[in-house]
Image (cartoon, rainbow, N blue to C red; front, top):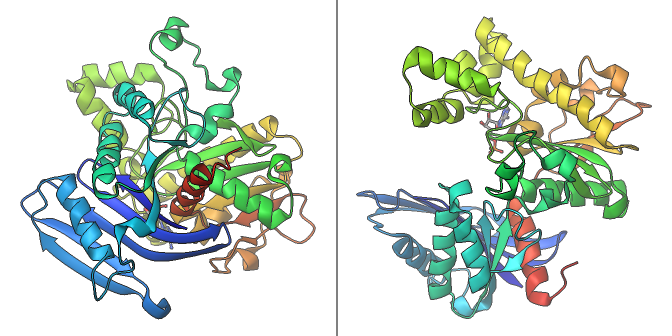
Length: 407
Ligand code: AMP
């Protein structure tokens, strides 16, 4: 079944066309990114893989609206010579990544009028993403009129958290009236990792207990008990929790007033600073983990401090989530840093041996796209590295909705 996965941003469209049977039998027919929609010159990067070899097409042209971007994508997908499908009607479903739908939907659903209304109601809690996600659905309905449109929420996997984990200790009306609570994000990734870890461990998903550690540009962790999320680090927005590339993660909220008073910043400038100028970048000036690691290796003390702070928060959260997940099967590292950065995995796993975490240094250096384990022989706890694949997860869930196979 051919499924198109779309992640629509305010000025971008990321897409992937996947032909799939199940999580282990699929092929990616095309991937691409449309950027700078609405700017004088837009860019499209479109990749196909004829015979397993990557073929890249790059275009620059004005793309005033998302509709123009979407039409270009259709033209590239169906191009007579280089296209991967003959007709848009070969696409059975379009899976849309949607940031937040609060408590309204705890699973993937068909993007009906009621679902679109719910996405709209949650604009205030996802002011950058939800409007763009909705626009993606509406444009897709126009160019793929025969395909089923499906919404996959980044928050859905975390809806199984109990109130003791998702409530903030603030006046209760803030929750009952304004829906303020921890929602958590990266849910599609944590769900994919839970399924992949279960397959790797040879266990049913509902008996799988892991701590999923997603370390990329954004960073979050999920405590997964019996295949279900029981706690996660991100909050009502993705700003809470771990230290990230440019996000602060946890901070005493009273610090915000103090620094606003000292600097004269308004709340928008403050949130910009916490989202875009903090984290690794705030401490050592760069947010790409490769650069931070290199600078630290060259003796840069602030880069070293940033690494220690980044690592320590992950370690503390591992400890906390061990309290939340009995009979833990594994820690699982994923995303750009988690999958690729040997030094960060080593730092995270060093000094918490008393928690049963013991890394094998040689296994940690193995580079493979296959799920693999990196704990020392005889260590009480498995440490896994599993590449995440959010697009595949979205495609799988879209297919399940189309086939009526949802749990
Ligand atoms: P993601 O958001 O999952 O694409 O992850 C992006 C981040 O992964 C980048 O900011 C890099 O810091 C990090 N990253 C990617 N490759 C490596 C690598 N080989 N070593 C260290 N960090 C990496």
